[in-house]
Structure formats: structure tokens, C-alpha cells
Amino acid sequence: MADIKRAIGLMSGTSMDGIDIALIRTDGHSFVERGPSSSVAYSDGFRTRLKQGLVDARAIRLREERPGILALLERDLTLHHAIAVHDFLHIHGIEHEAVDLIGFHGQTVLHRPDEGLTVQIGDGPLLATEAGIPVIHDMRANDMAHGGQGAPLIPAYHAALATGLTNKCEAPVVFVNIGGISNLTYVGADGTLAAFDSGPGNMLIDQWVEAHTGAAFDADGAIAGSGVVDEVLARRYLAHAFFTANVRRSLDRGDFLPPEKGEISLADGARTLAFVSAAAILKSAAHLSQRPKTYVVSGGGRKNTAIMKTLEELAAGQGADVVSAEAVGLEGDAMEAEAWAYLAVRSFKGLPLSYPSTTGCDAPVSGGILAHPGA
Ligand SMILES: Nc1ncnc2c1ncn2[C@@H]1O[C@H](COP(=O)(O)OP(=O)(O)OP(=O)(O)O)[C@@H](O)[C@H]1O
Ligand SMILES: CC(=O)N[C@H]1[C@@H]2OC[C@@H](O2)[C@@H](O)[C@@H]1O[C@H](C)C(=O)O
Image (cartoon, rainbow, N blue to C red; front, side):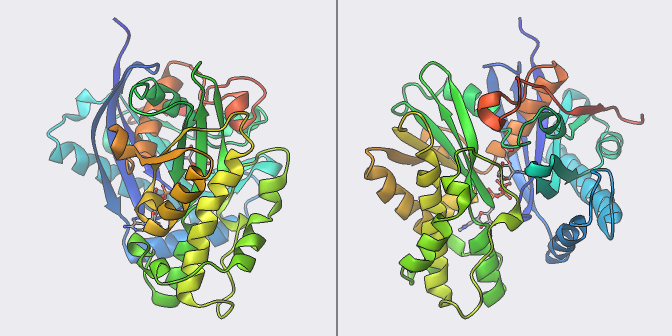
């Protein structure tokens, strides 16, 4: 019997809205049994500190540097994760000893793939000790050390999930994650993988809406619903070199900026940015060697009806369907956390986390650092 491990994945994504947590059992190959999942929202105060952390991170030249508030923030972020793990295990009646590994993403505070620099704050040894469970952390660094973009890493997990979709949707399938940044994974009928970041997801909408209303996001796309697309502004975003370059690269939060306040009304701005988010996915997918037949959407952006409406229309124009992760029996809010659990098991077994076709690394590479409790 294959060596199956029970692992928890922890994701604090680019939206900085909280921690997603998920439990899976897996052999690190195609066997995946998904367990419970949940999310813990950050307080407004902690989100404000995370945003300051992004500013302070701009001074980082070597990835172990922690200027400004970053050292304290890293400790507090780790302790938030430890509490999330304890609460999760308690709620679900799971003993700590029954969990073999935690896959800990941490919080990306700086991502400059062109300089070979990616920084996720999160203290793996501290989390291992606080949680009493071995932790695999820092999973992006080795990919970059081997010439990769350091992201996206979720494609290895998408490949495992795709084996269960054969009778549920038409191939070829593309998994789309609409988080702060969006990324996609193409899985060919023969298991071929191609993946890359596909553009701004919710981050521009979030910043735009927060600047005008104080709300963290456009709930259900309601603000966008009363606006119209400004085609000139949309074209400006979609003309960005990111979409036209021959080589796909991964994105940092600062690579795209929201419009200037006053440049457009709140509602039209929200509608235009939702259009851009959807159109960016199709524009990026045009770089794939084959046209997808089904887009399986996960991430918070699938709850924005303006993004989904545009995505469905544009995909229909190319003969493709758009379905939510839930429609094919998956969990759209937990997929990244599940992926980090899956990747932790692969890391533990020395299996590749990334491939030349997913991050642009020189050869399939593993990654991650193992931290034991109390070490
Ligand atoms: N009900 C909703 N209506 C509209 N948008 C929503 C809703 N719920 C969440 N979102 C959007 O989803 C975002 C969070 O998505 P998600 O958790 O997938 O991102 P993330 O994991 O932080 O980002 P990334 O995948 O880039 O790391 C929120 O910031 C918000 O923009
Ligand atoms: C550097 C970094 O944290 N990148 C994230 C971000 O959020 C979405 C997109 O940009 C993706 O490339 C990646 O996360 C996902 C989970 C990944 O690595 O697969």
C-alpha cells in the first residue's frame, strides 16, 4: 500500500483577507482524499499591518532580511497560523498526532522573479513547535534557484485533481484560480501540464472599492453590477506587456495598479476592472498550445458575478464552458490550502513541486524546508 500521509495546508494569499486551512490524505501522487476546510479572517488591524509589511518589504535585497515591522509581523503571522491549526483540529475532533505534516505558505511580501527574489514571511520552526506538528515551509525558493518563476506551484495539485474530472467536464480542462492574482493550469488529456499567472484577479477591484467605500471587496460584484465597461481603460490594462510578451512571468501585487481616483466613477471602475480580470484569463489562455474546452474556476473571484459573467461570455465565444469548482465536486475556497498540504507531502517524499512547463524552471524540482517541533 502506498505511503499515505495526512497533511494540513495553510494559505495566506495575495488578497491578505485571512488564512485558508484544509486537511487532505494523499500519497503525493494521484490519491487525494479531501477532508474538512475553513477560513479564518484577519482583523482590520492585522490587515493594515500586512499592508505596511508590503511597503517595508520593498527594502529587502537579501531574502532573509526583515526590515521595518517585518520581523514582528512574521512572528505574529506565524502565531495566527498556529491558533488557526489548534482551532481547526479542535473543531473537527482531530488529534495533533494524527496529522503528519503541515504545508505552510506564509505571506508573500515581495515577489521579483526577474531578480530571482521571492519572500514569504512565516517562521516554519516556530509554527512546528507551536502546533506540535512537522512543518514544510518556503516551497517557492528552490524553484527560483533553478531558474523558475517561483509560482504558480498549484499546478502539481491540479494535475492530481484532473484525474477525477474525466467524466465531469469536457477536456482539455483549464483550472483557473481567481485570487488577488489569477493563475491557470492547462491539463491535457495525456496529463501534459502548462501553467502561468494569467493577470490581476481581484486585487485591483479590492483596492479600487476600498479606496472609495472602505469595504474590502465588491461583495458579489454588486457595485460592478450598476456600472458599464469603459473600453478605453480596459484596453489600456490589456495592452500591458505582461499579456503580449513571448515568455510568461509570475506577478507581484504591485505589477498592476488601480486607476487614479476621479479617473472614472466607482461603479464603472469596478465593472471595468471585473471585465479586465476575466478578459486577462482568456488573453493569457491564448498562449496555450490548445484551446481549453472547460474552465474550472476557484478562488474568491468566482463569487463576483461581473467577473463570471464576462468570463462565461468570452469563453462561450471560443466554444468553452465555465464551471465553478463546486460544480465538479471540488472546493473553490480551499483549493490552494489543499494544494499546500499536497505539496508538503510531495516535498517530504522528495518529489517535484514544479516543472519547466509550470514555472519555467530548468528541470523538475522539489523544494521546501522541513522543520520539526522543538528543533
Ligand atoms: N462574496 C464575494 N463577492 C465578490 N468577491 C469576493 C467575495 N468573496 C471573496 N471575494 C474576493 O476574493 C478575494 C479573496 O480570494 P482568495 O482567497 O481566493 O484570494 P487569495 O488566496 O488571497 O489570493 P491568491 O490566490 O492571489 O493568493 C477577496 O479579496 C475578494 O476580492
Ligand atoms: C508569489 C506568490 O505568492 N504568488 C501567488 C499569487 O497568488 C496567485 C498567483 O499569484 C500564484 O502565482 C501564486 O499562488 C498560487 C497559490 C500558486 O503558487 O500556485
